[in-house]
Image 1: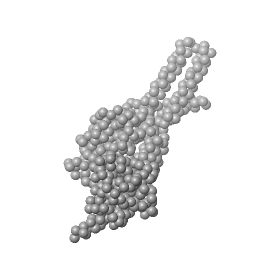
Image 2: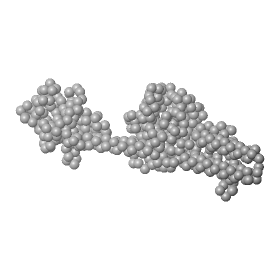
Image 3: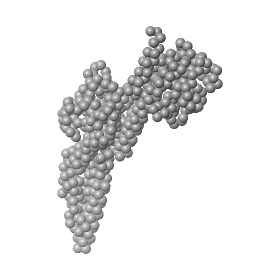
Image 4: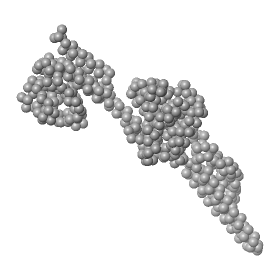
Length: 511
């Protein structure tokens, strides 16, 4: 019975590593598992796992079982016993390590450890390439033998496959991270005025997820059941505005009601009107002088001209004031609409309007700076986001990213867009992003078309939105009462420059 126990231990270790190949994707966790099981199967006092760095060709390790601390070491792939195994692919079995000149005694001197016996085998993946070295020291029950070497080789083959799988998983994660980061940079390059928005929304959304994990929240198990769900939420938050690729840049970056060239056309029209009025007035005064009119009559014509020019200046000042986004006073709206009736003599003497009906309609927009057509175009970014993200072959753990991002402008009462679905049909992750998105749109300091709202005002607006059935009231209360903005973005203490960009997490107004 006793004689069969080592064989059972070895079989158990082999099964553990085989299981890791199918289940463990975290490289650090996997390496520790491999090292632990290798030490057990070899009945060794200590073990070390070295990997070959594909960039430098060096052997490196921060895992030395039994040392009690992690300290990364690096050395040439041809140095020492491990280097010999890595470069030749040969197994090295030493029951008197100090008798072999390849053994580096300096490690023992540095650590205070005494290596007596040593067994090192290559980690060879399926194509035959060596990816590292597995080494065990000081067998407890006697000298290492060929059976130990054969079992360790079998284990090393499975370990190499597991490591390759984990490295491939890491590469896929880096690929997704790079794609997401590049997409965020591309969004910001099209709309620099909202730089940082995507990152802040992601930070706020994950902060809300953390707040929901408390025991007082019954929804926590729905949101953060696994690390994969958290990553899925993060990617959806970072990419929620990626569909702005499909919105015209002029609309996306529009800061006032009129485009700059449209306002310039109005200014030129007013300048032309002033010149025509001045020329017409000069012609009248000259004719009056020729006809021998009294100076008072000529002076009256001059004063009439000045009055009209002053009125024109006030009209233009009113237009430029109404061009800025924000509430429009009723008297200003009435004056703009009346201005459609004002004309000036054109080059051929015909009456031309100072302000076109289209220009007046834009200047009297009741809110914001976008026309209905432009607003519809901007709202289309959500559908563009969904179509774009749906083309990506997401992993099974991330397959809901398009769906989550698709819902960030939906409302609890069904009045949102693009689908107009109600809160009970909307996943909680999309509702979380919606809260973070609205808060950042209110408080961001980098919008040229309005001032940033202080936290207190933004909190009041969020609660009003929730009371009106637009935002999830439970999420809003957790977001505010647990201080997610202060904790995540440190708004109370950070400078505007610090708030613009949140490190460690991968920014036009939320409509």
